[in-house]
Image 1: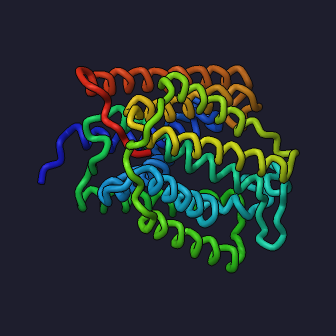
Image 2: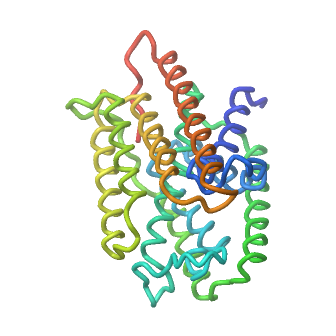
Length: 331
């Protein structure tokens, strides 16, 4: 079967949008290091494509994709970079594990919670939702066949191996065997759980839904709140981030089950998350790539690019839904 060109385009777009959101829109990498996206795409982009394809081919929606995003986080931060266990990750003396440290597991609860949010909701969630909105007619359908899946799987595997090698060369760190084993076991458990969850029903509840501008603004505020939670709060920071997650997921679950919830609302959540990322990138000191001025220029460029992608996605979704009510989409 020949895959339509628009679906190939969607796959390629997601393949590169994921690392751009995860590292550049976040503010970790500046514009001058844009070529590095080629090295990041196999793992970030490959992971995002595989997560989306697995969920859509199984006829499942966002609960499955978010759980697969958690499995991705465990692979990336627990087995590949192993930042969950490294007390001096990247040799930058940032003391990431000191906040709410759990000696029995050798992890910092604050760092682990932050990584869960950054990978599940942003690296994977925002990236997938934005690209699906760019191709709204195919948003609920698989974009590839078995050959495409296998090819992306190879890219993802190569990306993980390359990232592990680069990380080991820089850190000279390997977690304990027990840590690697329990992370691997938890990853398998989460991935299997993503497909045994009861399938959620579509929007059939009564009640009003907010305007898409409101749901987008809500996501921006909650995202900025989570990203700005001071690590020095320790367990208080962990509790704050968990509370924000519960509020966000609870509100989305309630609203998305109502008949008025449509494609623009789902896009608004991704847009709000992207804007939160882009705005927050202006706040911390730059990690790489030169001084503050160059970093702020980079932040401006990537935030403007994100807004441009959002505007294009809004245009395409509205064009698809013109002439009738928007189809209700599972969240």
